[in-house]
Length: 141
Image (cartoon, rainbow, N blue to C red; front, side):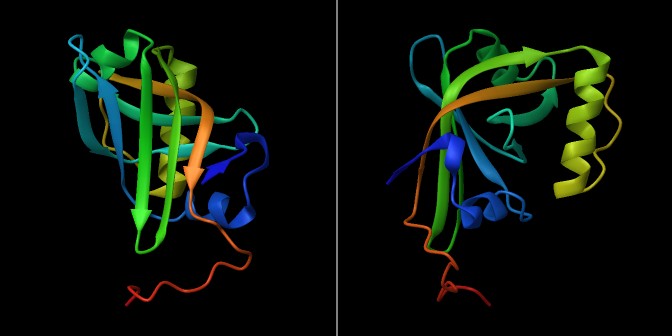
């Protein structure tokens, strides 16, 4: 079901703050998908997702092209997919900000002098029906 990026249900926003990994799908030059596991952070005000990565990684190379990409997170019956165009930030302030956001959701990232930030400018969100409150997943332990 399509969701409004500007008015996501609170349960969907909370889901994107829980400690889950996602997959980032970028497109290679030939149009084939490149899918990798990543951690990401959601910025509700800016409507962007941030992924920290090494400068020379395939996902960064493909993100520099500004093509469309998707981030998908799933846990049991709950899922969300963020779609949009990509850009890469390399300045120290942006990298530090992304690292701090990552540390809040996951843990402090290891030092990496080659770190950059992939920004997904989200224009489309897909996800479950997100009733409020979200019913517990039958798959939860």
